[in-house]
Image (cartoon, rainbow, N blue to C red):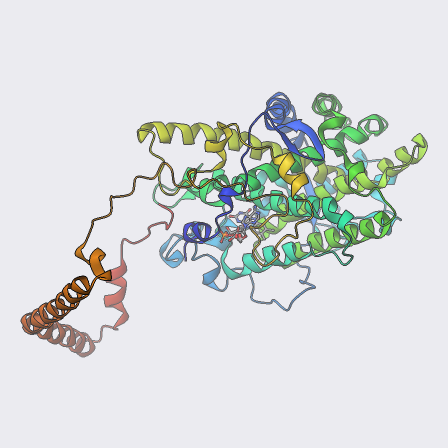
Length: 545
Ligand SMILES: Cc1cc2nc3c(=O)[nH]c(=O)nc-3n(C[C@H](O)[C@H](O)[C@H](O)COP(=O)(O)OP(=O)(O)OC[C@H]3O[C@@H](n4cnc5c(N)ncnc54)[C@H](O)[C@@H]3O)c2cc1C
């Protein structure tokens, strides 16, 4: 089943209407437009920052066993994991195989423990506090132990961009549904809704951001070129405004965490030895952020908050651990970076609540360098997603113009770009009004934050359907109508029988020819599957095109 067909089944497109001037959620005092503006301002510096020598390396254990289920199939040994995107992988050249697409550039990976220069310089650049294992396991939203594991490898992120890998099918679906299942909190108090909603949005925003990157850096197997694929983006993300909104929500969450540690970053002496501009790049990125972008205090504010927060932390830690079940190395790498980045952001937002400045500085000092690297790289991923969404919007508008205003059936009529132009209901009000709703963890497209505000005329309004032919069958309700229907049916049955007899000689001749050709192949020693391969040649078509 193609991904397009799957998305057509889930019709969450009509769940909400977004206006670019509305705030992105009840916990965020910032609009889509404002985030676009902030992002345009900080994008160049953020990009340089994550390409700097300090921020471009990440450490992870690629060989860790999946702790949640027995899964030793190996990456994409089962070809089904790719068939929903591209047909007939086997016929594509070696460098297009998912193992290669989803692998890591060898030269950028260093095994930890060796005294190689990369590791050594990273260690020199950091003060001791950030190299040691953090002695506060209770405050961690991810497993920081991986950064000190002997089996971990150091990877150059810039040499392994996050892009389309062909990873998919049952395996990635299983990972995503396990992640969404973590949203089922144990306590059932109604005050947990905002926290539950935030958890869902974080995961969905991560999912949508990955979908945006793989659509933006997509391999066209016909032209062998990498580039944006608007159809794929619309099918995965653009047709679902709630998913786009969740990317903006995640941007706000990570931005607030960066804003919060800004005063304490100045004390850190971590990278200027290697790249003297790094501090000023951090400064110019973070100084453009504002505290109102996200209000973390709304999430855990009453008596039950403490246990709810523990639950939230444990569940998010599980999400980071589920990444060890991802068999595609490239996907696992970026999954780990981003879940670690969110985990670090959450730790900063929810664990630095002391009024004591020294205590705050202490929490920041105890962040490992890999948490900092993950935090900035996650912010860069979200920033890149927002930049891509704006580019896709231009492509979308051009496509709509070139088709004379008619939107292709693939682009749902209430998709993100379409409704941005409309003065719709604010997402924030839908968040508040629907905050008691349970997210449906079976259908992961459902969101607790979205209300069904669909108007019947908005649906399919720009689809031009052929006018229905009025058939004689319309008069079926009367006795005469029923008689006509019966006579027609009998007539059609006779016509069918007659045609079958007429076609009989041709059908028999074809069958004889087929049997003869098989017998001949057997006789000369050609295996039977050759015929099938020839029949299927030149079918390296993408489902989505
Ligand atoms: C951790 C991880 C990292 C990955 N990284 C990459 C990568 O770098 N490159 C790459 O090409 N592939 C990557 N993948 C695979 C990719 O995410 C998809 O799983 C794959 O492309 C198959 O997509 P799909 O259309 O079948 O649906 P999936 O994306 O697998 O989604 C499954 C179902 O979830 C629902 N859904 C989809 N998006 C959302 C959302 N944002 N919010 C709520 N519900 C949603 C839909 O109902 C959908 O049918 C990664 C997968 C995982 C688990």
